[in-house]
Amino acid sequence: MGNTVDEIRAMARRAVADTRITDIHTHLFPSSFGPNCLWGVDELVTYHYLIAETLRWLAMPYDAFWALTKREQADLVWRTLFLEHSPVSESCRGVLTTLGELGLDPECRDLNEHRAFFQKLDAAEYVDRVLDLANVDSVVMTNDPFDAGERQCWLDGAARHPRFHSALRLDVLLNSWETAASQLRGWGYDVRPDFSGRTLSETRRFLKDWLARLDAKYMAVSLPPTFAWPCEDARSRLIEDAVIPVAVETGRPFAMMIGAKRQVNPGLRLAADAVGRSGMEPVENLCARFPDAKFLVTMLARENQHELCVTARKFRNLMVFGCWWFLNNPSLIEEITRMRLEMLGLSIIPQHSDARVLDQLIYKWKHSRAIIAEVLADKYADLAATGWKVSEEEIRRDAHDLLSANFWRFHDA
Ligand code: RAT
Ligand code: ZN
Image 1 (cartoon, rainbow, N blue to C red):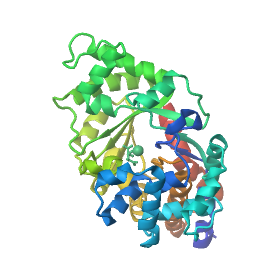
Image 2 (cartoon, rainbow, N blue to C red; image 1 turned 60 degrees about the horizontal axis):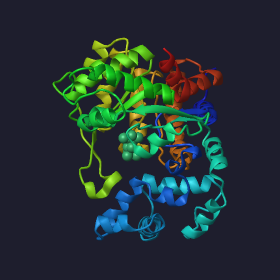
Image 3 (cartoon, helix red, strand yellow; image 1 turned 180 degrees about the vertical axis):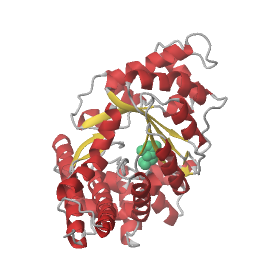
């Protein structure tokens, strides 16, 4: 007797719900990082995904919006997106899922009532409560040594939290070399914009210093759709002669997040970025040229997802991860996860949260888990139709691989 489809579905849902997640890309911080640690309803409602949606409805100048206090911004977003219209977008729905999971009344339309709940909380305690509620074992932060505020926290020895890993983010180094070079010089690294002298060895020293300071699990960069490698630019040179050698020497993966078109409408600030299609050649070239380096890759354009799967079939040093940013919507997560399972089996990291506000872990994972479970169930049902019988233990093993172990195995390889 094979499994019935209902049994399979129930087993897949249980397995995915019970699996403790390693969330490999977030923008979260523990409370010891002070103002970098965002949480609570005003932060949830002023998430930049929601600000972009709000400003579509309003005629006010962008600067007038930014001149408001956080609380006033939250009031305006709430009124615009939740009271004057129904909150059907994924980002709006996420706020309501989060409030409901925290035990608040999602029907309540008074933001002040929700605020009252958060005012009583202690940040440090709340961090663990949210991680537990989301059933997230640990998260990987995005740590930018070029961000003055964050950098100071690291130099001051801000207390580490055992459930917050770090990742060394290199956007300034790789996307704004002139700026990075002058900052590195100021910090005592002998680098020059024209790459003369000890520039490359000093850049490697900088990377190794910060990897060690952070105990970073990987290095990461977001890249524009025009990203090319190899090519005659500073980024290409830095990747080849600084980042990759350090990645290989230290065994750390290099995460490339490709397809972000920055600041297409700067008035929107953090919400100003868009998406563009990228070529696959840089990924193919890097994976082929550096078989000893490990590449974590996510791409922002829906149009790039299929070719990314094909490329991952060719290179075992390429781990595909997440449905990034504009792809983190139910219809797209479903489509992409289904395709990845069909083309790569279980050797993927299907999702990361990208949470910027702690509490977002609750909805981002609740929503993603539900989809991953259904897609997996469909696949096991297809297997059952061939006569292959999956056990609950095997389903749990697979869910654990997808949501945690694949990352750590790739990291440790
Ligand atoms: O998803 C986001 O919040 C974006 O603004 C970006 O932070 C993106 O995820 C990134 O890591 O660059
Ligand atoms: Zn991100």
